[in-house]
Image 1: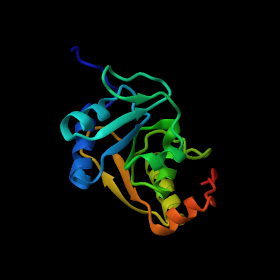
Image 2: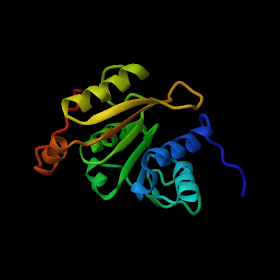
Image 3: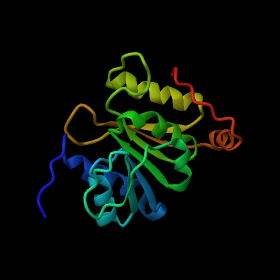
Image 4: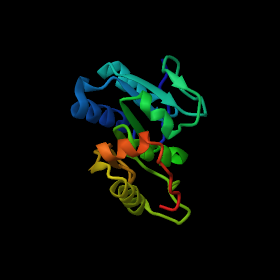
Length: 177
């Protein structure tokens, strides 16, 4: 098989997959790799850690053998998965972050698709963390050991109040965050 070309540090896929395994072990099975492009993260998660990972990406660019759903990711899809991962998920940043109201989420944002105002990397991470505080979602900030300025992620887990609000259909997205 020929080598695939990726933008950014190719080590990020192994770094994230190892982090997921170290943090969750066999306590999870189904993983959504949102805006996962060619599917390298899903491939590593499946091959090395035996997770059932699939790419959800409207572009349909995945490598042969990588399960994918050619669709835009919506936070309402989160209920099916044990973990939602958004590694540089661009336009899907908001729905990935919103998924933390009902499922664990690992989001490593890159471009500001969070708000209309211009946000740098640190401000973008802080805006997502503020959203979590307001919605009572527990989270921690993590700096991953791969090259590039976009290596800061947020691991979040829903709390009982956030899950109850979501299930009561009182969930409202505030796009002015």
